[in-house]
Image (cartoon, rainbow, N blue to C red; front, side):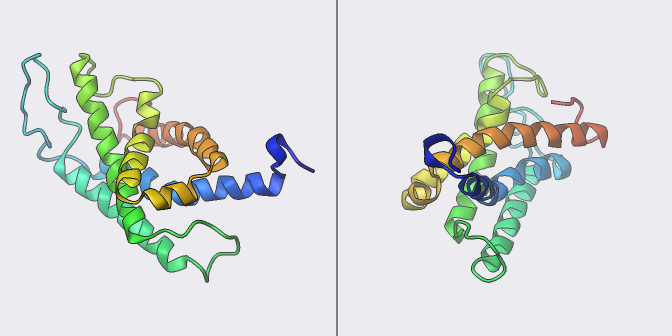
Length: 188
C-alpha cells in the first residue's frame, strides 16, 4: 500500500521518527532554558532608541547556557546510541550537527525576541507561528551554514513536513506543562 507520492506507511513512520531524532537537540534547549533561566539578561538591560529592550528579561545567560548544555547532552546520548542500540535506521548525528541544532534553536529564539521588541510586543505575548517555528529556522539556518552536507542528506522533504507538523504540537504541549507547573506565566 502506498500513500501520497508513493510513500508507504512504513516510510512515513520512519520519516516521523527521523524528524524526532534529528530535532531532539533543537527541541530540548528552549524548555530547559525556561526552566533554568533567570539571572543576568543577555541584553544587560539595554534599551534601544525605540524605547524597548533589546531582548528583554526572558533571555538570560543562565538559560542560554543551560539550554545549550541540555541540547549537547541529548545529542551526545544520541551519538552514543547510534548504530548499535537502535532498531531502526535513523540519521547519524555528529558533534557539529548537534551543536548547530542546539545553539541555532536558541539563537532563533533570541532573534525572534529582538523582532518582538521592535514591534512593541511584550514578553510572553503570543506571536502565532513565529513562536513555534523560530527554533526550527534558527537550528536549520545554523546547521546549513556550518554543515550543509549534513542537512542536505538528512532533511528530506518528508522529514521536513514532520518537523513542521510536530514542532508546534510539541511547543504547545510543553508550554501547557510549563504553565501548569508554574514555570511559565502564560499557556502559549
